[in-house]
Image: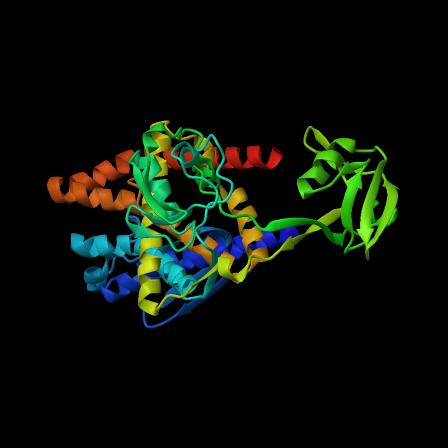
Length: 454
């Protein structure tokens, strides 16, 4: 089922985002008087085709869903001449400003689409935990700066913090820029300024998913009790007689005061009988249960097959976030800008070997994340679409021949050196552009395969 969700999530995401991207080229071209011949989602043999409209535009959905294209009059070869009566509608005959707008419209609409998605998400009522630090680990920069558990984050570089993760993208950008971050922290009613010196943060192996935790931005965790909430069917716990609602008292005479006490005893005891004492309806009950062995790579650990009862946050710990449509629009634009600049900085750092190339993900990992997102919920999937839309927009603006950015770069050359020279230069560097794209895709697939096998 997980594989099926990945396929469905990936196909929907790529189909929607390619359609959005190509529609940008299509719509602007038609508005500027350029004749469109083909609008295709995907490459290869068509699985659906329709010809419609006064210009008899060919609309296509093709078999390979890894891209698309809009073919305009004048983009063919010498063997495909333009009728002199329609020469004024050919793409190549348009002034440079029109061609620039048409080419830039693809990436541009990807950014607009991301803003729209972030705006939609921003208009939803969010329930977040208050911006209070939990267990600030000793090696982190925040701990070294004197921040401790229970302190409240007030602002980040002057921006009010309503919840702990509100400015994560901004902080990540500042770390990559190696610029200091000024935090305002409230500790028992006393407000102080804390400066994070980012030039000391090792960024080569920086992990976007764990950077904030490495810095010390750890929130208050929910309270995990020693009560059993669920027992897996067919597990040693069910066979041994444990039931939902039981409270762990001891294992092999060792008191169990926290769930970590339980795991520290059970995990090393794979295949070993344990004397487990629980409290059920006020009565103490003992039973012998042998944890089953579970293999995770080179590690084998014991598992009973029970899940703990987790207490919900107290009402005073919950912050409700509501945004007006205008605030949601500003939020969407800000998130899109921060994610775009973050993507560019990560690419730049990878090119200069300051950040590991392992951060490059390909279609296999995108499909995996798409499957996870679609299972979590609609909002999570929309957030995923926004992130991929931004990545598509940024990648297409890179000055690489074959991409939109390569065409835009050739127009800059055309302004200074003339159209004939720009065309010759573009043709000359196309093989290098193809080589760069193949190399990037090969790296992405290599990373995907490594992550899957690991």
